[in-house]
Image (cartoon, rainbow over all chains, first blue to last red; front, side, top):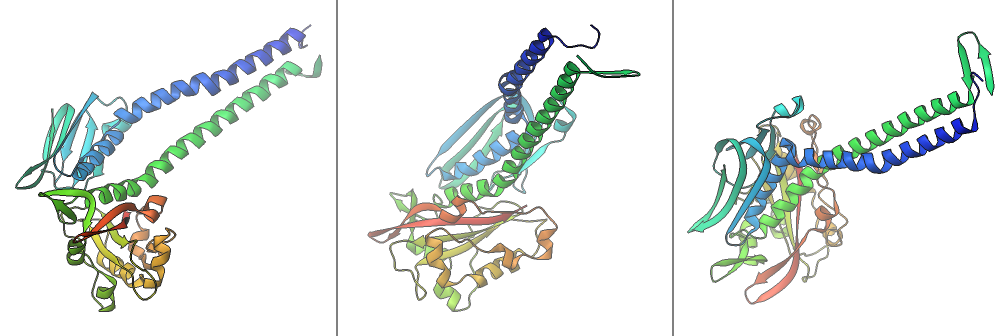
Length: 137
Length: 222
């Protein structure tokens, strides 16, 4: 009869509701988490934060250290004399990522500009005094 | 079963169920979206200064100028008391009315300043005496103005009777007392976490003797 409800309808709605809730709470969030993690790790923001951290913490090595970071994504980057590292994705996936991101670091690295790079090397060396180096290719 | 029948609309139990389900799903999605996105942003904002303070503390306890060396190699986490006397200020300096020393080690973050304190936990510490060293690290800044005034204000407000509470990790430099209008213009981050309060463990070397101590790095960043 038009406009009436049957037991099959009710059971169907309940099953669909349960399925949707299960999907949202387990599968979708797992997928969203994966996507968010991927975006966070390859984003200019995340990369600038990671590199600035590694550049500063390289100073915590008592003698010598060489840190090599290899990324899947490719970046443009600039180490500034004002102790900021600027990072931008070479092929930004979205509008927001087109602008670069900056993060400060605490040690005297020489300034330099690098384009379309994915391998970053940070060194602390001793040749009479302590020196810090940053390279990217 | 038809609940209501009027011109152009037929409301059924299944219709109500569907509507409730849709409303519930939208509410759930909105709640989860906002709660998750908001949480992520808060963590990133709060972490900036904490991360910098921890990194700075880790670098300071390894730096050649402050550490005790064996065969020319600095021992990480073992600070040289003579170097601390030379490079940092003590309560005796404060009593003499001297300004807090800047730790001039070429280690600084831009647009930030940090207060560094080192405490000897094996020396008696009360309102009369306390073995502690203080310094500040100020980076080049094109944003923060009046850093030296703020640093001097913080140094001026530091009282020896507060130190025992420092040692139990319940008190850090009170930025609120010294904040100026300049700082309210920007989103400033002030360390307030457990790591800022409790610090990192260090050893302090006095000639042949070694005492247990701790270093606290606390700061403000933009």
